[in-house]
Image (cartoon, rainbow, N blue to C red; front, side, top):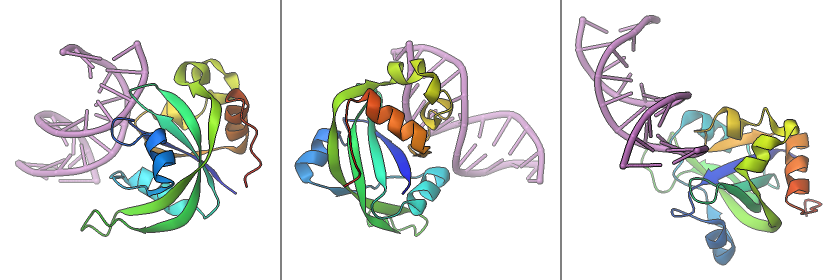
Length: 140
DNA sequence: GCCAACGTTGGC
DNA sequence: GCCAACGTTGGC
């Protein structure tokens, strides 16, 4: 089991939209490092959903339902998408401010590489964020 | 292959 | 809306 965090501006595609849709394919990644992370995702991996720019907070947990396949919105075979579905909304959104204030999260890629849109999380980071979100989740 | 110029992202 | 950080592009 691996843990990930994806960023999206809610004006482009929000957590609420994901819940409403019941799942989506995660397209639009045009950065090689983010692409590599997408390709490393396995079915069943858990993905935290972060709203950038507006809100700047983690909204909930999504689950990978289909591993990387070619991006249907691009002619360039370099790019891939994965399928995600909402798993559980956070009882309490975790803000960027709170993440920055937590010493356990000082090395999180969200802060260190603020422009990366798909990033791996360490297990301890994932668990810390769940706790901050007041959201117990067993992974199923 | 280096690096300057340029475009984009995202926090403030 | 500004601007710092960083990825990409293209000339040499």
